[in-house]
Image (cartoon, rainbow, N blue to C red; front, top):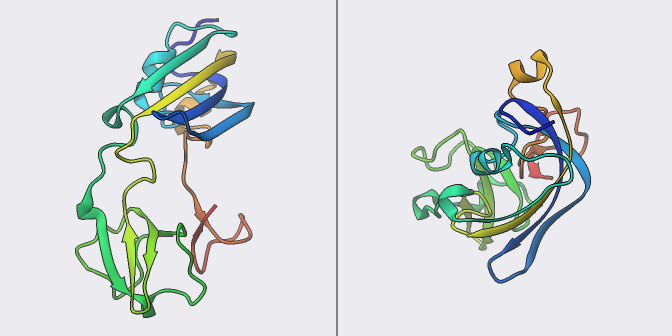
Length: 178
């Protein structure tokens, strides 16, 4: 079966930056909904018409991947508004109460720097502004069920960032990136 809009594909990949440094490797096939919210639109389009066994090598410019880096999404916030246990790279769903009221509330923010009195929070995707190279291998293709199409996702999005606590079934009291 050829890949069409709203079908399910099982993929593996190797993602690198333009200097060849590996950023992510998916060794075991994982299913994604093509034409839904699971993959970048540029990957959806590139996969159309391919069949199991095909390998694609793509160069993704920032506008085809995670967008350009936006320095307007950097916020210097008081250190006291954050948990004592704080590390660079930790993620938060929105910013804590008392932070800059102009900061968009519907974003994931990552701790980029920690100072004694302030924390730099970054609302950009960690790969924003980067050109990427990805090698995809198609393992299987099947029709999506009506339920999968209706949800628009299989829940396994490309570089899906989730903020959760230690127990994935419990909401996070102090969100961190996993």
